[in-house]
Image (cartoon, rainbow, N blue to C red; front, side, top):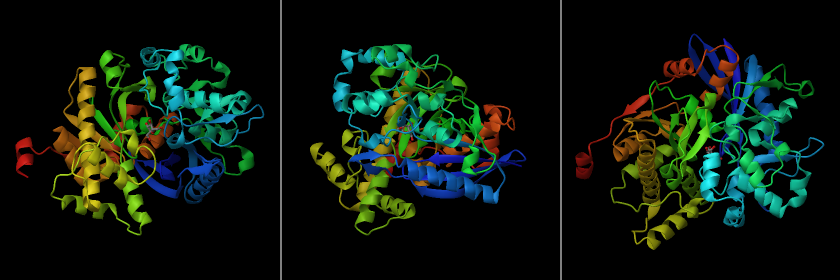
Length: 473
Ligand code: LFR
């Protein structure tokens, strides 16, 4: 039996999960869970790096107490990073993308490069949270910090550095920066030059599976190898999809990443028009996808009710939604209005009245509006992906937390009129574990890894109800 540790940083919580591999199957065991909400630092939403690093150490200790751990990998969401000074220390506190203010910088991008050229050079969907725009804002508003910087490390690379003392940029997380070339998947010289950035700030890119080094002895955490897994959570999630032929996926957590896996990027006019992104997956595959808002709105609604003393479980939410027979308004879940933390009921109400729709009343209607609007967004995005790739796909793999809701999976199947295959729910942790096992030589390659997932978890299938039947309902 081989035990490896996946540290997964999600939007509300971080977790230490041990993957136990034996007899062609993987079992996951959560050994530590902690809050990962942003903190306010000098009025800016930020990463609580010191606290999170002690949670990583706690996660390693708990896991070591239960099992003999061979290696460790860290994954996080994309785009956020820390700045390292000439002494190897972190400058200030890394900003959290939900609080960044890059609007003014974005308006001036065309002074440096046309949007078309920016897209062609990086393949990335233009989003105001992208690392490139965050770096440019720091240079503009905090020049003292920018000019003291010697290296820029994405958050998962930063934690790896704190554990091992080694700096590197893992390829999949680097591909979320809008600073990499979509073909070579290395740093884009063109972008670095156009924006007058210092190329020395960007660490060497390493492939997933690279063994970065052992945890520093003085941390007293044992002899554990740190492996560069697919450190972008989405890339780890896609790696775990037990598909054997081309497929669509929805990696459904706080964000919903709706896309397909290709062996080349797509940079045609349609891809630009639809704002689809090309990011790097395992073995330099391309994840051709759209970053859509995901369960974020549902999570915020839950938090809104919690604040007034009402705690809804997901089961209760599903019941309420099913019992809400009236049609509800449809919102554009990607509208900027819903980006930041806040009262989603008030924002949904505003959206509904601005768009001359019926304003929801009561929790059932608010939650139903969120779920139905998400499913509608997936449907539209899938049409865009099929149009840009020129292919149609009969099935969608839904992975991540959202795959646990039978109601939601059935709704997605009905709205998209495609079969939904749900699971694994712990896709990110599973992908993280798989990459470590591949690196350690325990699993041959990704094809074998995906078979192991199929052996290890139950994949539930949802066939769409025919459109005519849906109308009758
Ligand atoms: C999902 C994700 C997306 C990325 C977004 C922000 O967790 O990593 O792929 O675009 O978070 O970084």
